[in-house]
Length: 355
Ligand SMILES: NC(=O)c1ccc[n+]([C@@H]2O[C@H](COP(=O)([O-])OP(=O)(O)OC[C@H]3O[C@@H](n4cnc5c(N)ncnc54)[C@H](OP(=O)(O)O)[C@@H]3O)[C@@H](O)[C@H]2O)c1
Image 1 (cartoon, helix red, strand yellow):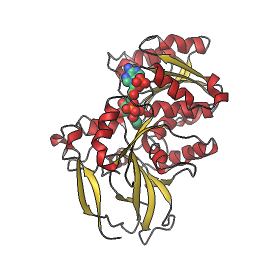
Image 2: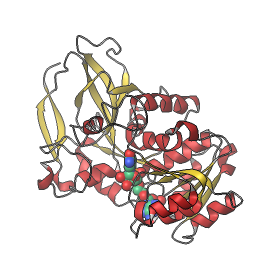
Image 3: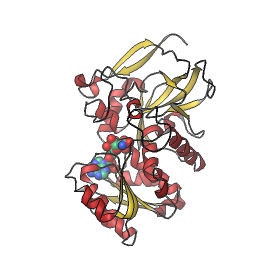
Image 4: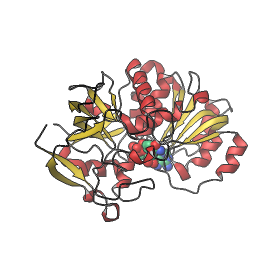
């Protein structure tokens, strides 16, 4: 395919000054290599990481030159390289966050350097060429806007709940999900689908209502909502819900400001998946707390292709619909970034690329 397309760029990291650094440019449509597919991108979703990368505050490996941002996008294949046999024109796909991470729950030190919209160019473009191993088929019941929410937030929640083979989530378990952002709302949906209980926290009763409304009526009894502004003691609620035993999993997106309560909430030998850092505070002594609770304390970096495929099967089997909070047109990407930064959203913020 020839011609030009539009795409966003951020300048080299040291020149990034926040969301106004996003520039809409025009250039030649990428040409897929022999083992690549060319994707017409229909939708992109934003993650907290994208906001931090635009502000040059991201601690992990980054491309040091101009970058096409955003890790998460979904679209359709428009052409394939001459060595590609698994994919064909018209297939509906999403990119994998860490392109080279094919199996297992933890990428190795080389794989980590293939993260879209960070280490390598990402998805905020009308056309993207990716290796045939760097994509997955999207669930058939989802629109492109819904499917664009899966690569980072959903897979991270999945990896937290299913990443340790001996400790995978089961019916009857209890989890804590912190806040109503992308990762936490997916954790709520995956846990409910598995027949597990969720304690979900938020700064807002309205956001909690919206999150609860996502869960089918007959499963809503599995969910306990806690407003952490009016009731900061969600760790005590976690103990009440589990008759003092503690929860099986904490999907830890708060970081320094929530870790102590996560350790108060966890059962002996439970899993705290350390994921993010949205809550300010003084971190506790993790070594001491891990010793005291016998908890697994596992760092998560999204997930692999194998995990993405398994998660999509769960999403399809349970007809899970991601919560798309708001959709912005391609030309208004900067507004989408600012909206997510304001934390007015519940679930996911999406940019429609192909309207
Ligand atoms: N390690 C990984 O692989 C990975 C992958 C994805 C994301 N992350 C990280 O995980 C975190 C969440 O990402 P996201 O994309 O889900 O973010 P997001 O959609 O932007 O959501 C952020 C949400 O955090 C909640 N929050 C803020 N302060 C809080 C507090 N003190 N306690 C509990 N919740 C609080 C807010 O919800 P309420 O207003 O409802 O409280 C807010 O909407 C970020 O730090 C991100 O970098 C890491």
